[in-house]
Length: 267
Image (cartoon, rainbow, N blue to C red; front, side, top):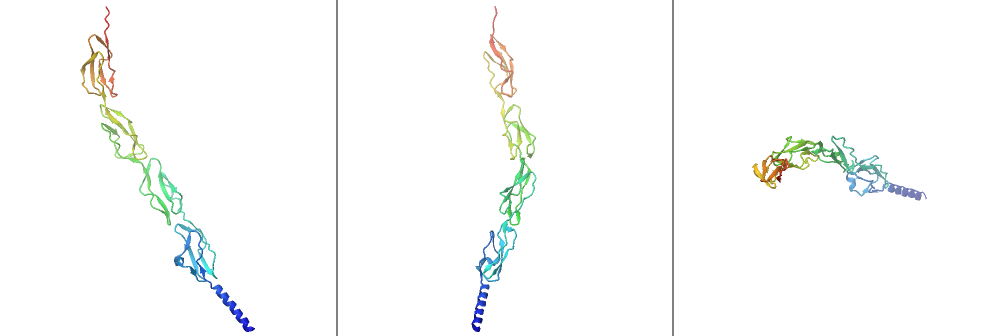
């Protein structure tokens, strides 16, 4: 009877030791994390093993212990919580603002939007990475325009190498030419002059033909700006208006071609 009791107690002790020494299977992981080091390759862990979890790339610890221990075939509770890394705001910029696409977390981008009249110079977009914002942000500088378009038979002023945003230039046509289009252009926010430049068109007046009259003296065709002619009426006709007219910038004779009307004889 005593021998039987001893054997029974020995068997129970062996079973207890066996239960306590039971291995653990691969532990379940939380969101956005994985086992650290070589433990990620194992599928079975001896009793008493302690493993450590680490947050995945782009995530950081939000608190809690990253370690768990295998005890009698079961893992202790995992306290680690992983959240997406947040790089926070880039900071203030001059003459512009930052646009986050879509936010400030890992993988998101920050783009510089310049105020009207300014353009981004150098750098590019920033990307939120594991160590914070990566890249170099441009700076917003005043928009500049290069030399304005050249207009044939015309000129512009002032004449500079570079023009700043909203600077204005004025076109002038040379003598004998008239302007067709806008006189003033301005340096716009996209770095070009607007509106389209004008054209300088050579002034020409039509032949000064009148009924019952003819050219007496003066310039010969083509009749350009400031050309002057004198007209006379045929015999038996009298002139109403100025006999001498001049070609103006609008392509018209000034003060207007005269008229020849038949003389009325009173007996």
